[in-house]
Length: 149
Image (cartoon, rainbow, N blue to C red):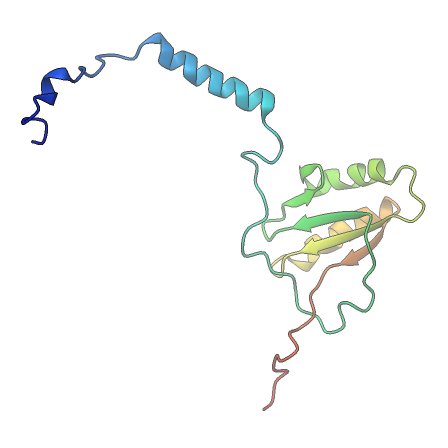
């Protein structure tokens, strides 16, 4: 062992035999800091790395700046600017957000794997709350093959 030439082994401290109270104080303080100073961005679910918009020809022709953006993943999780929402609670959230706006426009960014029924439910809730709805899509790549040769 490398400690033998300098006799360093004799100067080492022994391992603690049990957990003392300081361990529990540290765990409690860490929990308290997460509870008090945590934000909705810390330890919260987010959009996956493989989030893909559907590809549609002419998707950018009717593009306008939205007042609100909603993102939906394939597990039917709806992410708003205030965090994760259920589809059933989305209408009430949109009604609160609409107050005082002349022409509200919501952009729904649905992953390519999201079922159409989920997008229809979100669109119905937004329309009932008085929003105009745009579904996000991306243009196909310029050199992408459209079939054939």
